[in-house]
Structure formats: C-alpha cells, structure tokens
Length: 485
Image (cartoon, rainbow, N blue to C red; front, top):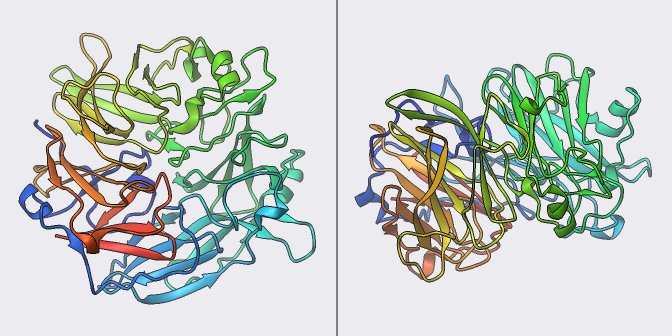
C-alpha cells in the first residue's frame, strides 16, 4: 500500500476531520503499529468540562509560542480552551442559556446548545460556532453564530449573528425552534458556512439550509435552502469543500411528489448559488422510496475524493446512505437523478457518522462505521468497513476488509510522518466505549481497547477522534479523554 504524502497536520486541527474535504487523515509522527499497541489513557490530562459533548474537539498551537489548546464546545453553551499538556482550563466562555427539550417540538438532546463542530480561522485566530440560545427577551430559542478569540474567548466585533434576523432582513423565513444545527461548520475563502437540518423526529416545517457569513463583514449573509420541506443538512461532517465547490448531502423531504432537493448531493458555489443542471446535483432513482422510508442519503456528508493511479488523479465523490448503499459520483458531473458512476450495497445496516480517507498511489480507501455487506474476510459483528475506490478503467467501489467493533463512533486514519504505518482508529461509542485501532492495509487489530482503566464514559454516537501532539483526544459528556502510546 503506497501512500500519498503531504496530507494531514500534526499540530493545529482547525476543522472537523482535519480538512475542508472532511477526509479524517492525520499525520502522527512516530505513531507506528508497535507504539499503537501500547495506547493508554494519559493520567496527567484532566479534561473536565461541563455539559454533554457532541462536537469534535479542535486543537490550536500558537505559532509564536509553545502554547497549545484543546477547544471544546458543549451542549451547555460553554466553550472551553483546555491546556493541551494537562487538560486544565485555560479559559471558559459561556454563551447564554441552552434550550431545554421541553421548549422544542421534538428532539433527543437536552439541553440543546452547541452541537455542530466549530471551526477555527488560523489567520484571524478566531473560533466560530452556532449556539442554540434561549433568548433573554422572551422570543424563545434562537440560533446565534458566535466568533470568539482563540486566545481568551472574547466575543469578536460583529458577533453574535442572529440567524433568523439576518435572513429575515433578506426576505427569508427561518424558524429557529424547528431547525437544528448539528453538521460541522466550515471556512472557505474567508467565508463561514453553517448547515442546518431538523430535530430528531422530523417535526415542524423545517428545511435544509446552508448560511454563509462574510468574515470581513458579518452583516453580509447569504443562504441556500431546499425547495421541498425537510431535506436537512444534518450529517456530522456538514459542508465539504474541494477547493472549488461546496458540497452538501440532504436528508428526506416530506410531501414531495417531484424531486425537490432531498436525498441528494448538491454542489454549491461559494455564494451559495446552484443550478438545476444535472452536473450540479445527484439523487438516487428511488429517492421517493427513500423519502417514504426515512432512509436519508444525508446521514453521511458528501466526501470529495481525488483518486490517484498510474493514469493520474480523478475527481470523484462518495455518498453513503441509510439504505446501506455507496454511490460513487463523477465530481465534475454529479449526474442528476440516477447519475452515479457506480452503486453498491456496502453495508447491512444504515450508514451514518463520518467516513475517513486513506489516499494511496493506486486508489483510495474509505473507512466507515457500518457492518459490511460484502466482507472478504470473516467477521462476526462487523461495525467497521474499509472500501477500496478505483477510478480506472471505470469508477468502482469494492470492500477491502471488515472488522469487529461494538459501537457507533466515526473512524479516522493516522499515518507516521513518513506516510507509513496507516492505522484506522474508531471508538465503540454506545457499545464497548473503548478505543480501537486497525492496520489500514489488512484490518488486523493493533489496539483492542486496553484494560479496565481505558473504558470511557458518556460517549455519544457519531463521536469522532482528534489526533494531534502525539495523542488521541476523545470527547465524552463532562470530560475529554487523552490517549497516548
């Protein structure tokens, strides 16, 4: 397995899964297969926070000093900067009262505060996030987008932005209490993009939204929304970006008799404009049946792939659905309804969470949480599947290996600093609640969860791992865990 170099960042981790494409690949110097076998909880890392945590932590290394911070956002609307060495609180910022479940028409998070993974602007030294806040003026639940200084948590000028008010001034109706914000935020070309869907239970007349804010002037706001009702952009990875276009995956629409942006991959320009040209969207031919079965294509974010082989690189995109299928798309021409280049049933159960990519010189490998449908090796439980993506002679999906793991975390991939020793890491969230590592080339376990001290508490489904500074950081309710070899 000859790997491509130059991917990942061993220091500052500014966004969900480490890059705008949401690839989930991290360079971890000296993290070999042998050292991975000795993973254990770092007893010197405190990591205590208040509130439940659904968002991935971020990591900030100040360029001119040795100061390192782990940034954590909680459902209590608290943002923490923990000292990267010992996990003690460097600063904390409270952004207002979260919204109780009783104040919402449906949902399964209580209280509801910050759910989507924030993002850091490495130029402005700023953190951006969406908080669901119970407004003090009695207007009820509001989505407020904050910009904070990464150095001390101070609120930046021009923030917070009240989403409903900003869109109302542009003639757009956004109803905060029926909209949830769980997908990761993204910065591209000095603009902030925030995706929205609905609450668990699909109540109320919500839509899928992406809101864009100019970071030079937060008063400048643009938006895209689904034509049909529902169609939420709710995958943990949120919006992805390939350096030219934004991509979102949408969930089921309600009451649509003609396709209206649901169960789809949508290409958006940076100004959030799109077209009805089949080059700019994809939906399965059975989109209506997926709508009726609540079998969202949008449980996993759109995953751009630059697949390399001896013929060069090919721009593809992978979509994974709750119907257990993988859809491989031509990224230059998404193909419209039914336009996938390859479709395979790759899982025996619904696919959610976020995948991780290992690019090689002869195809790309994609790991996802799910019980593989076509495993070449015998596994009893499943839970983690590795796909092989080939571009020639035609785009093709196949299953490389499957592994047994009990839980619903999102995988990541680490490599050594010379692009060797690729390891897939995943947490058995809401299962065995342990950290697991597997060789990316064969699926052979390299770390099987450790001893009694390595069992974690309060892990939420879809939890993903932050890799930096020779450690793996995992968020649980009330605590951030740090593992080191």
